[in-house]
Length: 598
Image: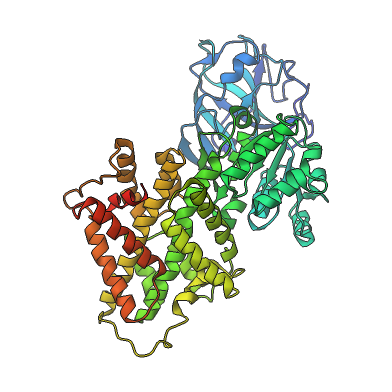
């Protein structure tokens, strides 16, 4: 068949990328003694809708021998350099997330020995990928030496259409990101104005989940609750299951309990649809990263499901933040759950610290800056506090959203008899905000619960006289909370059987990150591996001791009591630290507070 031109169509000349011209690449091809500027006719190609993406002149030292398409399955095994937007970044890549399906068309063979031309088909590639320059290419079976300056044609298969159910704040960004990447996306949402916006963004719309998925091999579900997921996928009117194609991949990206997504898998089997490849793949990162395709994604599924749809996960995730979680269906949701322990506690800790600062009479803008440059920093504090200074605008994440997540955490804690000491405290505070009508408001507005009583409690007087002394109390409050939230998260992760190092890597690079987690996380993980969690371990010389953290936190709690300022988390954390010190003695390391959860 003829090879279409770079811009589509079948003209007689190739449209060469300008960055390749700048690098001085040849604009010729050769095959079986022929040379010229016209495109070759490749008889080995199957008739697939494709277009030539890039022409490269590369140096190879090893080369797959002529053979069948199956022998070429090793083509993704490569070391290369990606070029995006004209800027090069050196990366070592295997055939995983970045190149999920790199092969020749079915039934084709590699070029014969007398030619240096090779055609590669790149499927599922990010549209931002402009060129690939390879230094070596290994085959899966055997290799022979080939001359240097081998010409390669890279062709991109027509991108698979995607069905997207749930176009809320996160879902809309995720779906429109796929549109920007060149995918035909059909979306469904119950809110008609959202569908109109989606059309304007280049998407197609459907009137029901069934219509959305009809004829699609890839489905993303991003609804708010397990009840909504059950309705759009299984039970509701015109549910997706009635029209799901055989062998379709369904990515459930909603934050739901592990128990639900496992039950969904069982329902599919019981309904005779065990062919459906379900992927448990909750996401984290917020609206902006959803729209940029740089989310953190925690995915659990069968190997077959990953083989089919890993490329789609990669399109929506940051290249360093796609976490394949061992354990199958439910493992992804458990990973998200333990991350949300940190998120839930640390969202509230930002309001608690800033509310305490306000009660102490500190300048909130200066307090924010001081915390962000200290070891009491957390991602949530940095991203919530600016909106506290702008009357909680714009609304980025409603209280109702994080409250849904705390309910998942505490319900699983009750089900598995795990003590969610901090998350349960945070949940009660969220309920207090809900009762005041704050549910739809940005979660940074929870500071109101800490400041509403200022000036209404009669004459009060604290001991901290200087701003430096007051700021130190705020920092010590945060350190105690961040320490114990790290311990609760890692202890819960261990209880549900997750890889603690993977959990730690996810959390420090996502919205649950904090400098305290970076510092104490590795020693807590080491204690779990060595079996020393229950007995605790001694603080290293010059290291952070639990007694010191507790004493400084107590000073903050004492001062809050003097001025009648509420510290919901601070008081709970102080009790947790006291229990750990009673259990393990006063010489233990700060991370030994995790013993309370064992």
